[in-house]
Length: 107
Length: 106
Length: 94
Image (cartoon, each protein chain N blue to C red):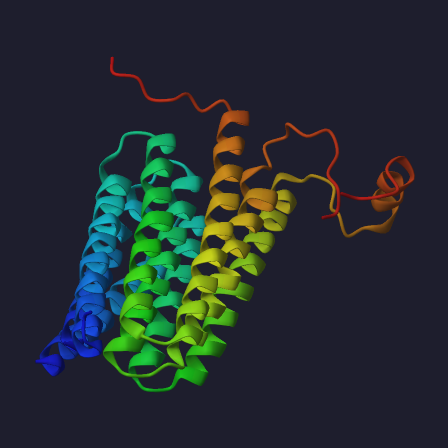
């Protein structure tokens, strides 16, 4: 049986690990947005930063907050961002296909 | 430990805000200016948060990110159509045709 | 330990400042709009981290408004600005 304080510390450290992973996803998303060669691959990098990066940060903060209401609000924020990001990225990709923008090939 | 980091945050925020504002005023591509304005509104909301005014930040987020961005984009489209000399959507005779053919606009 | 959250918020702000390059370089309009959307998500993450860093739970509400209105700009861009190259037969008043 783990005592309560130690339990909180374990949760807090797990949250810190999740925050770090989310930050790494945001960093790689930005590097991908700057470095990738065409619009589809940049979209790919963007969605990873949006969904996974923010998801890890929200999860880490929810573990550290220790309160159910705050955790539910954080989860609601993540769901809203995910809906917005997936809808708009799908629309951008479809419009790019309709405008005949060719995917990048190694030539 | 926390105050030097917050000071660095403020300095970086102010510098980025100035840089964005300068480029948004001086760029020639008008769509680029609109996107820079949306980013500027976002950073402005963060600035209000740092000035410990979250209520103003709430208003800035709703106005800057939610209202002025779509308004500017719509205005940009209408401006392009007027410049190209196409028919305008706000004259009534052209609207009547479209509504007769397709009574329910999607 | 709250300085860690503030440090992460600082790093995220740094990624926003670096990402402005894509707005300047972006060959198509959609690239610029995608960058603005990434800024929106990074802004939400910064607000969430600052709400722990500054011990202020009101910032969660600001982040909620950001998340609610994040899609509007991109959707308007797709429907009104980017999709206007004459492929459609009808121009509906949206």
